Length: 313
Image (cartoon, helix red, strand yellow):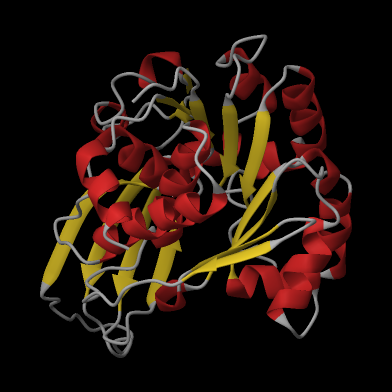
């Protein structure tokens, strides 16, 4: 581990209550018993940061927090980062994730602290000048309501400070409308790496073919990175202006797919932080996500296991 660069993960860190397995929603006014539950730190930024911690990757989680009974519990899982978080007088953001037997999931979330995160909160937690190789990942885009409105200014400032920028948008609660796509057009040129799953890429580009979507999106980016599309059990691909590289995933027994894409982001960007090539970055991303979704309680590879998993591919 010879990299001195830092990966800053910015966005939604909240409490996740994962329950399952539910095949059909109960009738109103009734109650059902589910066979498993797990209370854990979550959110796109939270999942990514936990994976980075397990891999011993130099990072910091950049976020905010509420001030209710769950706030201290949540912050305790990010001891190297939480001391910098802005505190708001509000409840902690909580998501109840319900898993289904077909490996799909449904989410119920409150608003809580994450909607109050601002660009000022973020910039105050980052060095005024990036060190060589530093990356900032913005995630939970549509859940951090205040921050989303400030994306153009924030990304511009990050690039002025010398950071490589990456964004994982997630799915817009209002759907991929023409208005959302228009908003994106103002800041995609300030983004180096765009990390999406298949349905997000199709929704954002609004084209029928996945490859055409990725090629369309990469032309809108800064030209310094690329568009990565995560395809679940099929693996992942990376489109850059001059090349396209795909990497398959090995079959695993899926236990819990929540946060799979966030885990992939941790592995992929960790490889970039360590100046690995794109093929290796895709391998690392798939390796981290594969272990995450196939373990309960959830586990992530440590640095040694990550190297072995990549060598075995």
